[in-house]
Length: 73
Image 1 (cartoon, rainbow, N blue to C red):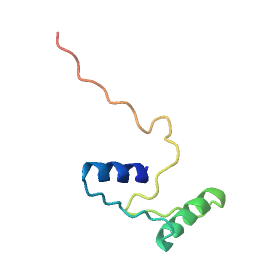
Image 2 (tube, one colour):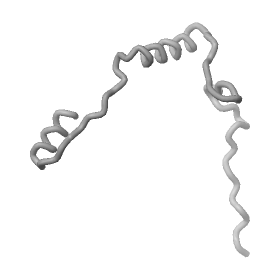
Image 3 (spheres, rainbow, N blue to C red):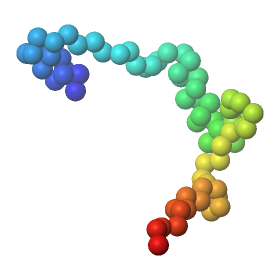
Image 4 (cartoon, rainbow, N blue to C red):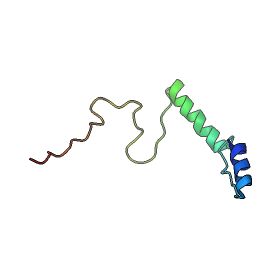
């Protein structure tokens, strides 16, 4: 896709800049490794803030649909 976008930008006389991807940056690789370990080895789940890690699947009563206010008479 980048090649096609670059070609189109060249044809239109536009400047194209591509954002870098995390690729093989050590921090990104560490994050992926930890996520995989959480799944296959029941490793402790990391999180930020005071509420702890979220669950994987919402319990039935977790996210109830909002109710609408009564309609006009």
